[in-house]
Length: 87
Image (cartoon, rainbow, N blue to C red; front, side):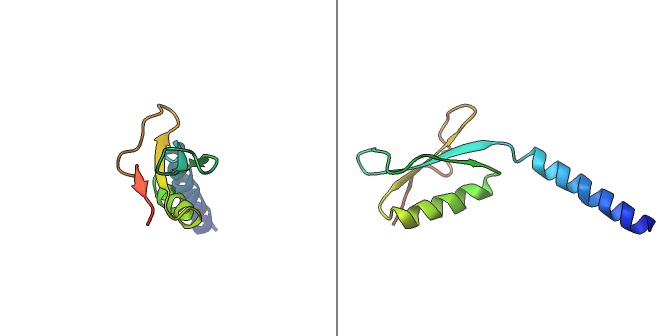
């Protein structure tokens, strides 16, 4: 019985730690070559792993788009992910 309680407590602690660091919100938008917004900006609230999934999805919908990723809290563009040209 104590084995299961300690295992549950360990998983709860790990889940709480992982959700604390994933609170950064990013805005991802698809633009054409002239800089016009093609879609509503998608707001992604996750760690940086969710950015590539959202970027790849937008590239499937808009094959020749330029994807820009910005940080919601300070408005800076994420240079490691943006600008990204879909092929």
